[in-house]
Length: 507
Image 1: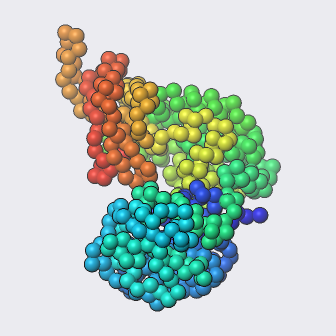
Image 2: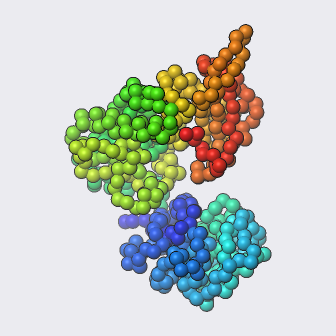
Image 3: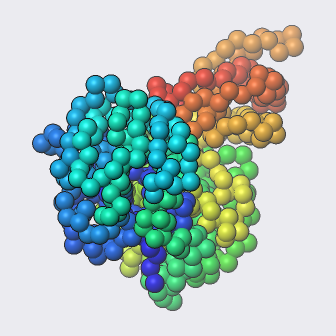
């Protein structure tokens, strides 16, 4: 049996993944597909509901994305959001007009509590608006269910045809009761039963993996990141010691990280191999200062090291990857491709596999973490912060040396320990060893040491961020410990730049 499915038809909306995640958080499986998907393809999926995303276009422009009007005639409940509302209006004979006053941000919105979509809510709501067009005349059969000061039709519905539309975005946090609105659509309009859970996902994937690989062996390139770690745990549950996990320690990991990874996976029901390759990788980046060149050299060396170990397991028929759903979406639904960002891209052609195993392919990152916790992985792995593939190599500005790596490892460990001890609010935090030297005084001696930069940010999606407002007392403690305990560093600075204009990482 398959899960009930809600289909997200994408018309270029920046929140498409967020819509899909919100639907899943409410216990209903969702998939994102192109807005121009054919009627036959939609029927084959057999969704219980369809959601049209927003988008940057004006629906009356010739080049704007459209879908077949028949989508609205299938008898399947449809919710149109922002551009999706305007598209539904356009297809059904209503009128979309350029705004006299555009609306952006949190807007006071009056809703009809008796309507299906706003059932259970007060009439006064706050919603997130972002539009320069609006629906000036509703299509026949629709009734208005919400308005704002400048938008007379902020929402509408046609109960007979199970069609609903909102000019605002119910999927974002800034729409205060957006989850209640989406729940009303899913459970009251679509008849959802809430049959999508992570426990169910694990059971289905265990069965699917066993069916795919039979009694064959599987090789996984284990990075120690969230995706590969959860992938390993799920495959271990499915096939036990027929899983071979190859962990390549390139020497750019954080303090004690390799030991932690070896401890967790060395005691799991699988074959765990740790390849200590620090010397090989340091030789590749010796004297290199340009960040992209560092990435390329490390990226090129990884499959070589992996291959040298993988050939020892010639009986392994399948290659496993920690591909997750955003990877699939961003690569255009492009089949089973070995992607470079999974560390084993670029394997030599003479290493052959019968297929690729991707048990996390349908999950968002937050779901991957939930699966990891259910499978018993420790919190430090399940909740691991984003960590670049080249590791500390791109958190050292300039040339990489063993001594610099050791200094950065110690400084970074101090930063993380003090932030966690103080319970500060931050989603990602790390230290950067700059290539700037500064004059200092320690005791009766002048020093000329490195400047260490601290980075801590708050973000929901890592696409944008604000710097974390760490208390000065915490920053002072971190600075004091680093300059006293880490040789070679005599100055500490704190990065207070948001993204944009900066990025989260320095290189």
